[in-house]
Length: 240
Image (cartoon, rainbow, N blue to C red; front, side):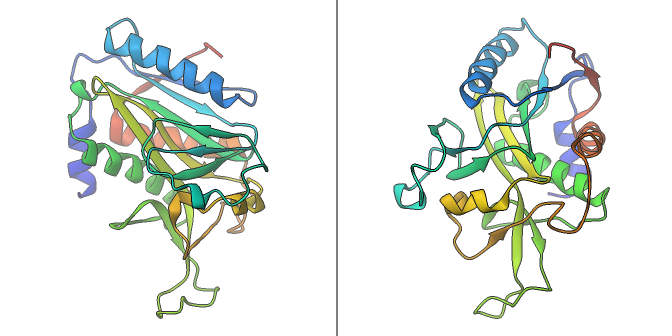
C-alpha cells in the first residue's frame, strides 16, 4: 500500500475524539501491561473509553506469540518467558526498547488487518526517517529492517540487513492491542536467547548501534508525530 492510501484507510471517523497518548515513567511488568490492555480494550469496545496508545519499557523478558516454535527459545532460563495472544513468534523486550501498545477501534477506521499492519510499519518507517535512518518493509518478513552495507553480504549475495522494529498485534471485536517495539538502546546481546521472530539469517540492531546517540524522549516525540500523520490527532493522557 502507498503512503497516501495507508493514511486514508487509518484516519478516524470525523466524530472520533483524539487518541489518548500515555507514556509510562517506569519499567512496566509484562503481566501488568497485558492486564491493562485487556481492560482497556474491553472498555474501548464497549464505548466506555477512548482509544489509547501506551508507550512503555519492560524489564528483560521474552514473549512467545501464537506462531512461536519451541526450538526458537535458545535460552529458556535466561529471562522470564510469557506466552501471549499476539501474532508472531518469539520477541525480546527490555530496557532501552520502546514498546508501543496500540489500542484502536478499527470500526472507526478500516476493518482491514493488512492495512493496519501496513500503517504501523509506515509509522515506524516515518519515525526512523525523521532521524535520518532508512527503514524498509519486507513482503516475507513482518517488521522494519535496516540495510547494513558495512557488514559482509549473505551467502546468496544479498546485502546484510538487521531488524530494528518488531510488530505483533491482536484484535478483539475490531479493537487492536499489543503493537510494535523499536530498538533505541537495548542490550542487543539479550536477543541471543531466542531466534527473533523465527528468522535465522538476519540480526538485530538499534538506533544507538547505528551510531545515533538519541534519548528516549526524542524518539517518543518522533513516534507521536509519525502516528498522528497516519492515524490522526492525539491528546496527552495523564493516567501514569
